[in-house]
Image (tube, rainbow, N blue to C red):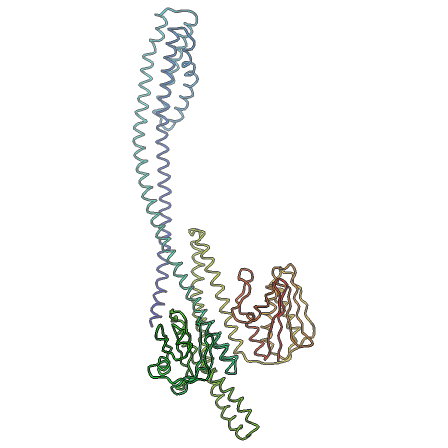
Length: 638
């Protein structure tokens, strides 16, 4: 019920979050438009303020040029020296340009235009008068009264010009005040709008970050679930493929030690209050020695309560197994029971004081019944084998014992099949639970990229791409794991299979999937085998697919499929990346890859699937190779 409530909350919060996100983007867009308008208004007002100052400065220059020409002309009239005429000559050139500029600057103001027209007339009249005085002086006429008359006539004209200039300046100063006020108002409005837009942008980024963080947590949960499914599958492999107790104990303890990341694992058999250490990994024990347990012993408590218990510190010292009492600082104790019958106890230990994780306890609790069934199955198998050895002594006893054993085997097989069905249901349930958050992560990532891609930074878009890549890889991993599980349970139906023709079909598919590759296949004709055609096709698809994949860096891929006449073994040989033979034993183990994912994509399941198919046929697989030279994968079918 709590899971349903949390799921309802999550489904309710997502539409609300999306609505808030869309609303935030809409508000930010509106504010951005308003900000752009405010900035445009501010720029326009500031332009007019600058324009007004330019008009005022031009008026000042016109009046300055007139004053300079007046002064230069007076100096020349008094002294007769041409040097005094330099300001006058300059004013004659610059005044028309300055008046033209002033007229252009005030083209939007009819009143100012009228004043400029009048100013032109007065300036022209004054310059004409000054020109007359200069000509008189150049002719040699030096009568001061006549020359001063040219100077004196300019007072009225200059007063008139000053009046025009003053009126123009007053008009521009009034405009300046109004425009400065508008500019200040526009500046404040633009500042307020930009602050509001920035605040909303920050809020939007925070919401986006929170959403991405939420999706990252979902992806982490999916990764953890996938890892758990992988660990369950690895333990199931050992339980299904080992019949003798010695083989089962060795393989089971090795995988349990890897899964729980323990420093040592011990398997003990239970004998009515006594334990007998029978197998160990990472710890040295004395097999066959029985130890009587007191009711206060932690192992005794674990068996009687039928629960996994965790011990830390001094508590782990109370375990009577010598390897634990002397070395381990933390321990997990797992009782193995079938119904009400206790078969044994599994113990995992750490030499450091770090406690085991809750996930380790849950994992062992899930597989406890399956491990117990597998041990009981192995014991029954060994008992049956020993009983058959007694057949030479008493045929009647053997028949009776066989009937009893067959009954027990049927019962245990039924129980194991039930456990298999439970594990299958669990696997499909976990895979379904994995796919649901993956679809959610992928869907939300696509929606974010399509709807808000332009608002996201390059780093945020990269995060989305990485999320989608991780989701797709996880989906492929789930499919591979489920195929691996299905092969284990699939019914084996043998028939005469034309291996050469089957290989040709697989090769045709590979050519269609890789049209750009230069692939050369050599397939030995007339190869036949007694096998399940469906499972054999799966094995060939994985072997040939690997050959195509690991020859990707070659200009020409050479792939050969044949059969050794002397041994009867089939082989697939390529000229690809190859491998170091010291790692050959790891090739057919699930999730063991000798090449990085950047060099060659893959899930690490393909060769494990091949190995499982061949084992179902009673055969074996092996590989030979050399780095950068190529590899040969061989298998037999019993």
